Picture (spheres, rainbow, N blue to C red):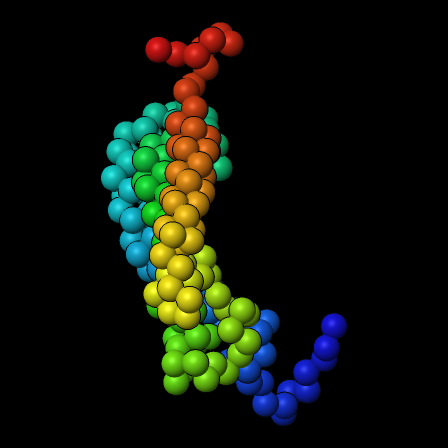
Length: 169
């Protein structure tokens, strides 16, 4: 591990590791507010009567969170997870500007360091060799990956509550 002195200049866009980290922080910060607004709206929409009934039954805050809040905000969690997955798999603009788009070819970092799947699709199909069939195959692969992970997220988040060992219908 490299130790950086406090007075050293860090060139965030020249080093591939720092460039990837910078892109991650930018994208996280860009979408954090959107997700938090959705989660806060879902939590405010949970009826207070449920918490009152749980308090009468002796449930604490932690138990109320796990048994009341999380199940009732599950649809919003599914929406945020799936849209975050789709957005994460389709990142193009920020990585392109930081990695590939610096003076259109004069990138500050290695062009492979910040390349995403969608950037690979764009470069293969519309720049360079113009391999449109290969670009279509990459687009289809991205679709299949997003579909598989979306199904997994949906299945994990929509498990049915069990009654006596059998699924409720």
